[in-house]
Amino acid sequence: MTTDTTTKIVSNRERLSGIVQAVGRRPADIERRWWESTAVFVIFTVFYAIVGYWLVVQMHVVGFETLDRFDRSLMIFHNEPPKLSSVGFDYPPLSILLVTPFTVIPALARSLIVVPVVSAIFAGLTMMFLNTMMRRAQIVFPLRAAVLATLGLNPLVVMYASIGARNFMWLAFVLAALGALFAWYVTADIRFVMIAGLSYSVAALTGYGSLVWFLISLIMVAAILARLGADGREVEGTTVGFAAPTVYVIALWSAFNLILLSDPFNWVTESSDVASSGGLDDFSFTEILRGTFDLVVYGAPIAIVVLPALIFAGIARRNGFALWLGLMLAVSMLAPGLAVALRVTDSPLLMSNALPILLVSVVGAIWLARSAMSSGFIVAGALAAGLLVSIPWTFSSMSDFKQQSLERAFHDAVSTGDNQEGARTLDGSIVGYDNELDMANYIRDNITDQDSILTDNASTYAVILLTGSPSTFFDRVDQSDGPWGRAARNPAAHVEYMLLSTNTSNDLLSTLYPEAAAGGDRSLEPVYANRRYTLVQVPNGYQFGDDSVRTGVDANGDGVISDDELTLDPDADTSTGTTGSGSTSTDGETEGSPDVQGGYDGIEGEEGSPLTSDADESTDTDSGTSP
Image 1: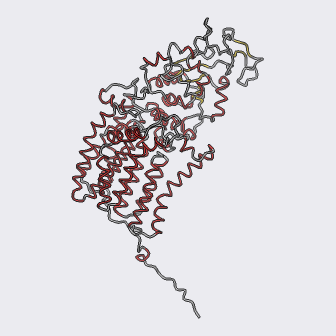
Image 2 (image 1 turned 30 degrees about the vertical axis):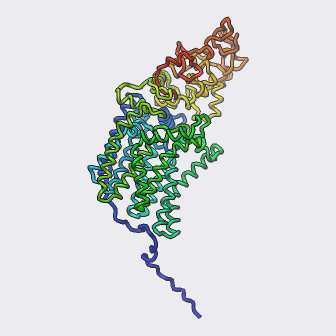
Image 3 (image 1 turned 180 degrees about the vertical axis):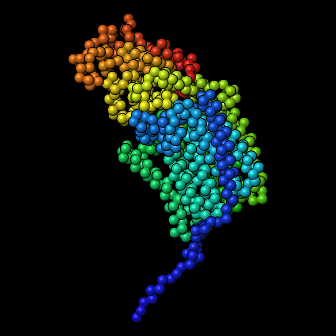
């Protein structure tokens, strides 16, 4: 008996039967217009870069978080030694690594010219992706231009696209992913799902908040395929292909955290995006609800109309994609309040949280315009009109919105044309970086030796950035915290100077030398100082905790003057057990100590610093937002 071993030939038609997506062929899609996309990108990038130069360089409206990220990027190339570890773990890594090409030339980084360019580029990409979505929704060019112009002039968009903030860095990749899913739903081309997955993987390491949209999109892809009748293999293969890049990068980043910090979830618990807040005020349910309401009404009012329209289109017209966009919009509205309720944020209900709500609302409105078919031009026109009306409404609210960062400074700069150096935000912070620039200029003009200034870069990063020469500083990145800590207790063996912040609560070095930070330690003579920083000279042989300056001859050349080599400074004051901090008054209080609110040439610390008196806090109008 013979066995039939003939192989059955399966035709391509049979193989693809039951598959609802386009596989192996390019379906009908919109005509590619690279020149139009390029024009949109260039126009908005140049516009935001010019506005940003005016805001950052001339008006001094820039966040210290932004300066911190640019300083870390500068250290990657120009520290001594250059260190990739300067990226750290408290920011999403790509929010720093994507900046590094712009800090290759230190002079450009030091001038802050490149700061607005970075955010402008990602905002320009966002506008480009939105324009492509509108083309795919068959919105005519005049209406596309109107929507882009009115959205692009929204004050929240202008501000965060121009001041170097990282909001648009991750939002650009989220919009790229949503645009790809938009195209997938229209064309059934599976390659767009893979493009969306890759976009989300980049977004995940640029802003951790993008993971919320990734999870919703993952469920959406599976649900839409199942509804269209795809078999289990197609659903599984598509969702795995979509999720794999993001899952991989998150797993890899967790592995780095485990290896280096012994905590795979450190990027969650200690991140500046989703830090566990021990100092967050308690918010009642009513306060969270009111804050969410204000965020939507003043930051993204069009969401009030778009959300119910998406839900109606999704349910009444069985429009699945509209329903999922409605879910994304609802989540973007509720996420800030939920983060406060779960105590996983240090930035409760900030006005910047309205930016994702606004952009998702626009995407939803674009889909509604496509779904309206012949009436799409009415929807697009209404979107442009709504965005236009919201411009003065949002701009006015920026001056007094309860939870904000630099919105008030932006509002005042635009409305008055005045430099915002020294202006106060609603939370009491001070805008500007004149003190940092002042100290940086002195260091550039007078100190050139490598590793000659010991400093805590976590507090003095803005000064380091504005010098453009991180190699001049012996910071915590150079040789890690261990060697830096030993140098901090024996500075004479390592450096000639120490740069101290007058805010001792945030500066590890100033915590060790509080009187030197105030300019009141005679053993550590101030060389230059301003309201925020004190640069002191370290005398030969000085050691932490001595009651006097160690002077003498370093006989063995080890950089430390030992007890048998030193001679005591006859002028050192040892009557109070301090390091030459000054004379003792008749009532036993040490003059020049932090208890007496000292300061170099009468200059005292910022508000909130242990070096600032209550009287000074009531009249302080000095410059800059304290880092």
